[in-house]
Image (cartoon, rainbow, N blue to C red):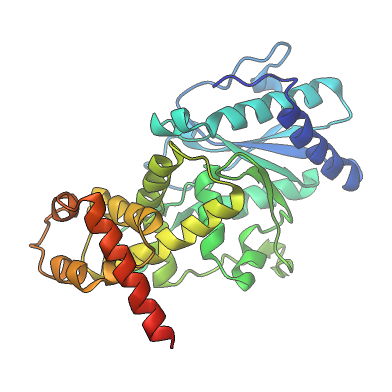
Length: 322
């Protein structure tokens, strides 16, 4: 997928980010890029090593420094910086293509945000603390890959309003491309209170940790569905919530392997949100042998079988509503 710097989509996203820069009174727009073993792309006239930047230093001995995210300051009243912004938008759009996502390459353009230079180091420390967390009842530390915008967007959907206020820390607005390639702004309705210049790190419930573990299988299911029909932002969000709730039920059924979880979410999004509530499927799921994959239990169902099951679930729901 190749996108031109002159495309209307690039111009529209760039115009929105320029407006954020102007509204801020000329504070830098920071370009956030996830760490990688691969070098940053070549842009004529740009030496990334000489660009003003801040590193999000992840405090974990097993994370090599090249995996640490970096934030680059862009002053959009300068022609070269505006040029870098447009290149980053092209790169971000290309990363959202189904072909790129199916290849497993992930996404590196985490987004763009406004922050005054004196506060950006505090923001980097806050984000480093967000990303390396100790999960309840687990050994060691967990890395939340929040500089993959697909992960950050998904995690944001699992947080409640009070957590939103704490999550971004000193950053009040984080702009990113949502999973369908549209510019979105993560902005809490209220800003965090600071203690000694630092924002608190929001605590996550056991259910939220489980939801975050389910993001990978859920994204795989959505990529398969999106390969045939590109969803709108509203449709994608609805499907995401459907898949998320389905995977909570899958965990109760002791489905643990990623392939089974991904298929379970796909069936909920493509067949029926409550497909597993049909008595026939409930019996099959409850009688499955330990570690038996879900695919082997549903592979014999024909299209006619699915249509019958869906009709019966709908009838059962209508009857329950009266």
